[in-house]
Image 1: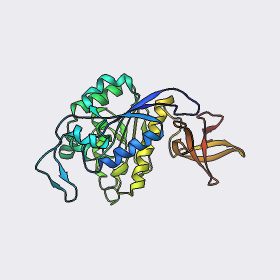
Image 2: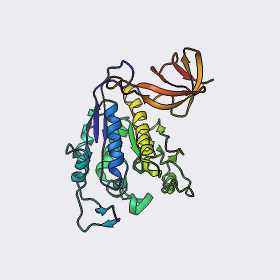
Image 3: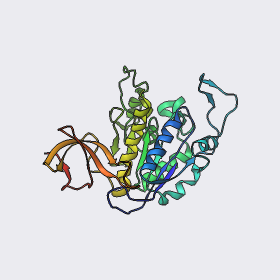
Image 4: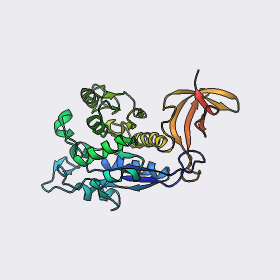
Length: 305
């Protein structure tokens, strides 16, 4: 997928920016790809889409888990999600200058069609076009987002990357793919633990990742996890790295003076706000009140002392 911002990301800022999310075929992929599209839309993004033009690893009947005899084309299958508006992924590396970020929604398609992770684990290869996109955006210092299993693409393509797939607790039934965290570490990368509401930002490599369906959660929890990744990515595309991340303790200037609280969301917006208008942070005060910071400046929100 690809997206281009039509309006501002932060308060009264008229800069233009763009993003690139990209779907693949695989079980449950549609959920995360559509969630990414919805969240991008809420930020006023104009979205374009890309997928590899090649045959899938296999086609599956997801009511039974059985394989179909006939295979399918990844690009054609991805077009179902994007209502036909899609281009071959091989076109994207030459267009990096046109976009500000790239997003890889998760799903088994990442492990089967964007790479061979499903069958080869850490010894897998990454699709040539996928690797070219990741390395091109990385070389251009442009942010990249991924959720679910997709962060393993960064671990394979960017040495020393810091990502998350959630928990590494293999004894927790809510994290059925927790072993992936250890595999990421085996690749020489850093895996940062988080719950399903968390997002991890690699400020060195400009990567934003969240767990999504690595967690056996409810649909709204997965939708929100994808949204956390998209929201954090938005902070990059407008004014660089957000000063504070989700979970950080800050002090916000309110009508009662400076109050202590915790950042609970990046790029917060309300439905009645004009398209593209967001607040850098939503903050839960110690009093229990939820507020938002309209500016990412010390006179509005600062590091807690």
